[in-house]
Length: 112
Image: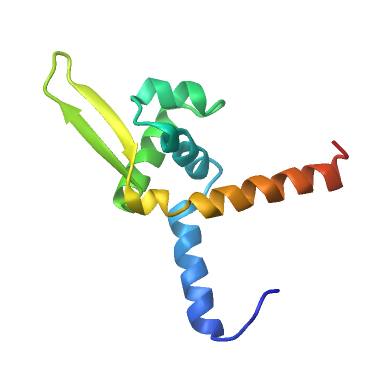
């Protein structure tokens, strides 16, 4: 049950969370990285439908919010790998709940 107790603080924390995770791609990128660190093209293949430009922008935003880290390795050409941070992993329960809600929503709305 949703409570409105402490409403201004609750609204602010929800607003902060939505700003950090806004858009249709960020949670899918985090889900992709939850399994293991990946290179840009690996993420691009797993997150179907995202453009390289959008993926680049979203990764920068996730990095700024300390949800993803970017590691550059001294190879030729340089290897760049993205991984989910412990702060990003703290969203595991949120992703699980969204998954279960999405299944129930699909069944209720689409009937499948």
